[in-house]
Length: 117
Image (tube, rainbow, N blue to C red; front, side, top):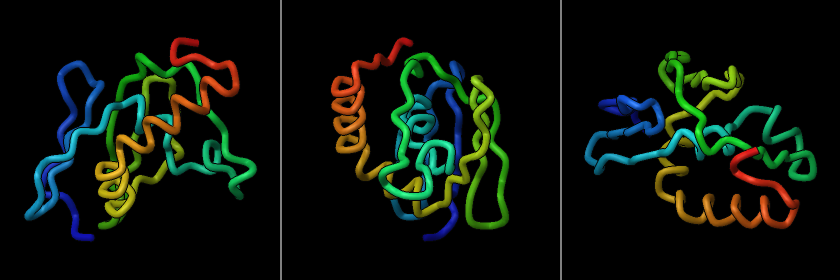
């Protein structure tokens, strides 16, 4: 996957718009990026270790830093910053956004967790 032409954070810091060459812009809410962070802290080292992250409805993006030519590190206002978001991961997350979101909401409900706490 080629690098995006543009990464743009909204003024309220709650939306990342990613524009890949020859693709429509992909809008990714900060909450989805945070709860689907590719970090070991969230994903674990196996599917059984994956963590459902509650209470991130109002999370915002503090900064985005390049990692080589293949990814960015996103720092959120809860200071989570260990996820390396590759271009492929951002592209996939953008195109499978609805499925990820539905699965996340189902996990929260199943575990008695909330987007607010």
